[in-house]
Length: 137
Figure: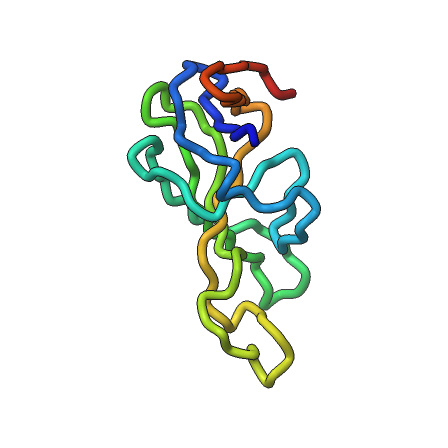
């Protein structure tokens, strides 16, 4: 069986992302997954993490000022290019049945999901001893 790994499309450095830790493409996530690949584990040494905390103005009523978005940017450690984001909507971290027994929700702690833009990655397929490279669009 051939294993797929990924490298940065900008500088070509190996990012050590393995298809063994990749979520299925049709799996639903609250933050979405269109045009991206999601992984459950990554090599932290290959990325720089940059926290982002923004308040988006949305004036619905006098007392409602908007919503807050917290996420972490994933930048390539070699070239600094933005390759994706970290979200907290991965699989549940506990076996709890969720709030009020209604299934997993935001009240249940979750593992991080590492979401990469397809355009920021270059796909490499390891087939035996040969490396086959292709750029994904």
